[in-house]
Amino acid sequence: MATQKHSPLSATERNSFRTICLVLFSVFFGFQASAQNKKYILFFKNKAGGNPYSLSNPSQFLSAKSIQRRVNQNLPLDSSDLPVSPAYINTIKQAGAVVLNPLKWINAAIIECSGDVLNQIVDFPFVENSQPLNSKLPSSVVKKLKNNGTQSLDYGPSGNQNVMLGIDSMHSWGYHGEGMTIAVMDAGFQNVNTHTAFSHLFQNNKILGVRDIVARDGDVYQDHWHGGAVLSNIAGYLPGNIIGGAYNASYFLIRTEDANSEYEVECAYWVAGLELADSIGADLVNSSLGYTTFDQPGVSFTYSSLNGQSFSSRAASMAAAKGMIVLNSAGNEGNNNSWGGWIAVPSDAENILTVGSVGPTEQYSTFSGKGPTADGRIKPDLVAQGNSAVIADVFTASGITTNGGTSFSCPIMCGLAAGFWQAHPNLTATQVMAHLKNSGSNKDNPNNLIGWGIPGFVKAHILAGAKPTLAFPFDLHIFPNPNSGKIMYIELLESNAVGDAQYKITDSKGALVLKSNIHFDLSNQRIGIDLPKMRAGMYFLQIEMGGRSFSRKVVMH
Image (cartoon, rainbow, N blue to C red; front, side, top):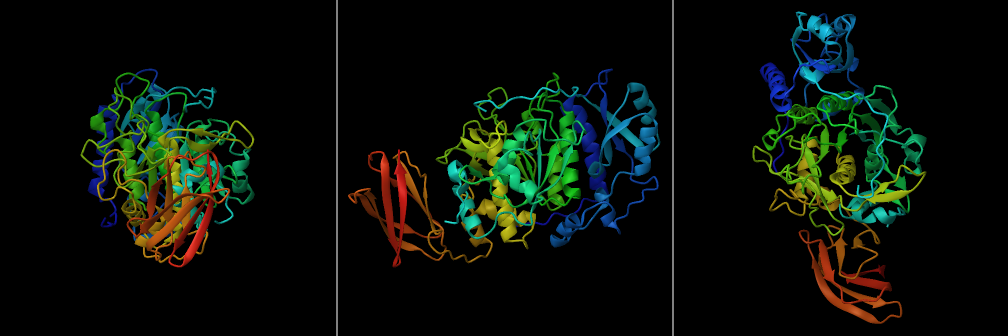
């Protein structure tokens, strides 16, 4: 795939975007003014008003890392980077409104006030328009986890979901997310500060900050389990149980979702979270969130909404234009006939990685949201293991459990993307995404179930110009192991070792069970072997290739 650089939006485009937002809020959400509408989005005419911020001094409003990210990718600053005018914000506050979040990219703010105060505010000369955001008062109820719902690293049960993407090879080469900053936007991160899978983050000062955009109470560790489970697939480190792909990255945890209700105000919170991620210098954003149907009748999305032009989807594309990689779950509506099985907003956004799900044996998960978008683009982009994904059980001190959903395939993919970008820091965000897609198992025939398929670190690493060499035992991976006795995969991870290989499987007494030849090349580095009927127990796999030998224990159950 040819890479492209994102050019900054012109003034005309920004004005058009702002106008589109107004129209889309009205058309898609069907906002109706009523006494119960306490929250509003307020659009401003400009960023003047004696604004003290200037593009010539970006350190006033962007972190050094955020500025450097733009420099590295040749992305000039523009007026969308400037904060909303403080004078406008102060005037609104003096009028009696609570300003929940400024939204600088579209020159707006989320506010809360009475109807009388709003009537006063909309008459201010710097205000262009307003629209209500239907919302529910925060609830203290926390939904509990539902049942349905080698290097010396010991991945334990999380091995399969890591090996599937080559994350174990990535770790073998020394890439664990060091130097990368990841923003995770979710419904809360309950007990992340106490579960041992995250202890290393606090001990090594890897939590850069937290923000609760919903309740604005500064505490994200009491709200909901979902974000902690998601975080464990990227950042968890509990050897023998679960290891995330980028466990040595730095993290900023942002709550944008009220899991006890589904109202369109959360779309605006989501945009505020993206802007925060940009300002603190995030390289990647993981969002295991999506929107299809709202609690208030008449304001839900429809398939025609999936054209990349909804409010939050446009913001996701703007985040990409700022040089970040945004990864968003494809959603779990694949079996929802009333919705059509489609992906969710904002996974329809352009220039982001929309992540679907496959099972442990790499088969499409029927719950995973499908494409195409309403304007005909292929979605999802990539897939990872979402069925039977291993996650931290945040209702225990150190336990793990399994759950299913694109909520978990997305952060597994995020770990891969972070480590790959770490390995190739000179690449732009667009180039990173292109290499990952071109390494996909379905790259020659992308479709609307699995997109470009399952990416692989080794192939992406080679595509990016690396010439890796690994010493045994890291150049061959055998999975699944333990094995149920149907098929076993042998994957070659050393790029310059191609050709014929001979293998044999023996039982614990040395009796021959199976013997044959296989052939590896750069386009065929993973080979499946159909296994004969084998009793439960310990077996040994021996492979000889190019004068080198390799052996591995295989457990049959």
